[in-house]
Structure formats: C-alpha cells, structure tokens
Length: 399
Image (cartoon, rainbow, N blue to C red; front, side, top):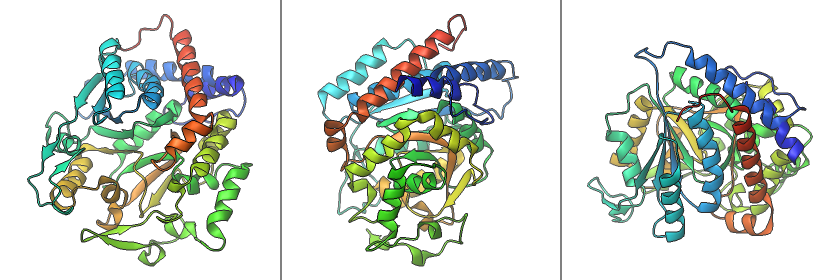
C-alpha cells in the first residue's frame, strides 16, 4: 500500500495544467507533491491583476468526523497550493454534537485563513411549497447564500462536495477548474466519481484489468436488467428519452438512477467496496489510465447523476439555484441530478479527474463496519500530506 501511495504522489504533483501522463510506476506521493509545487510557482509568476481572473470556492456539506478528517487533508493542500480561494464548511450535522464539536475544533485550530464555517439555520420557505406543505428545509440556507450573495462574481467557480469525498486527484484538479472556467455550457461539471453509477460506466471503458468492473457491468447488462448504458451518453448515440425511466415527483419530470431505484448501485455496499478496491489496489495505475485514455475527456450526459461533487461558474449556478428554490424546492438530489430532463442543458463528466465518494446512505454503515476501506483512505491522505510537507519545506506556501 505504501509503495502505491508513493507512486500516486509522484504521479500527481506536476500535473495540474494540462494533465500530463502519470507514470504507472514510481513514487506516487512524491510525484504529486513535486509537480503541484512546481505549477504553483508558475502560477505565482503570472500577472494576477486581470479582472477576468476567477476565484474558486469549495463548499462542503459537512460533516461526519470520520470522513471529514480525511477530506480536510485535501482541502488543506488545495488552500496551500492556491488551487482554491476559500473552503466553505457548512455545518449540517443537525444536532450531532460530536460531529459539530469536531468541525468547530478544526476551524479554531487551523492556521489556514481560507476556511469559513457556516452554521445551518432552519429557514421558513416563502416560495410555493411543493413537498406536501413542508415549510422548513435543512439545506435551504446553502442554496440561498450562493444564489443571492453578490460577493461571488459571474466568472467565479463554486464546487459543491459531499462530506465523504475521501480522495481528490490534486494533479488534475487545476485542469478541471480551467475547463469549467473556459466552458460556455449551462450545465453542471462533474469529476469522474468513484462509487457513483455514472462514474462506473465512464471508468469501465478506461480502467483495464479490473475484474470488479467486469462483474458489475455483467450484472447490469445481462438478464434481468439488460441495460444499454452507452445509449445514455451523447458521445455514443443522441439522447432519447425512451431510454430511461421518467416519473412525476411533485409534478416534475425526473429521471431515475441509471441503475434503477430498486436495484441501483447506490443500494449495494458490495458495489462501493468493489469500486474502491479497484482504485486502492493500484492508484498510480488507475490514474495513469484515466489521464492517458484516448476516449473523450468530456463525457456529455443527459440523465440523472448523483451529486457527490460538481462545479460550475456562478453565472450558471445562480440560474440553476434560482430555478430550484423558486419552482422545484426542495429535493436537491432529484432536481440537480436530473436537471437535463427539465432544461435543454447537459451534464459534463470530466473523465480524467478522479475523486472518491465513500458511500451512499444505504452503503455507509456496512462499508465502514465490515471493510478497511475507510482506514486505507485515511492512511493514503496522511501519507500524501506528509510527503507534501517534506517537499514544500522552505517553499513559502499560502497561509
């Protein structure tokens, strides 16, 4: 495991923009750090006075302590490398004192100025209630803040992340951000998410020699399912609504998960474990194959995607959040995941930029109690940060 981590670091550092090939062998951790610092130096030398320069705001739906202690390792590095302007920690612990205390303690003790914490407030909704008269909404303040706060300029970028993002490919992060900044699309941009049904289909075509991917593709493409996943992607065939389920949810047309509600990947802890095992077995090789694939780097998709992480410019975010709060509140997973079925805009999946989503709510308990996956991600994050600190010694990082 340590060798794989060293290989991953070596691969990641130096690959921010553009994404250059990652070696499938070598010191993983050291490579990531070295290349990241090198490109940070390059960015520091550029003229930063341009009015068109965008800021990047990374917002986390926080947070369970056992996953946030991993997630914070990556956001610390993002801030120190100047990859993000601020990290917004939204305390949605909803009465869990232990988790809330952990977030508060981390915010008090961090030496990085880029963190901001937001405490959840139960807000009355003045818009037309759609969900059977429900008048309070746990996450309303999140969407209202980014819709209405004028400090965020149209060219600035928002990244929304679930608390259980337990790996972020730092080497391809800047390429992902620049792709979003340069995009004229009016939809949401997604990384290639590990343990996500759409990410699984994208990874299947790009990650070779993984029996777990073969197993689950066979499971969903033979009887009784017989799904034809490639018909869902614009890269292969034009979008046609007859290839996916549509149902009415509070009067809104919504698409079901591409692996269905009843037997979907999100319901299966064993699916999560297999997807993580493919990555953790050899992270260097995994990222090498994603970065060097000859298949499309941008995958256009018009169906529901689990919203574990996404990004967009604020000009787009405000249009989407306004539609959500004023007309389709309050199931954000349904609305944002199925947004293309409401508007003539597509989701964009960036196949080269990998992140790991630990588990859905139906996978979570079994995954963390019966496997070593969580501890392996924590070990990886700690090793990456240790290598980062060693290689950045003497380099003045952003504080």
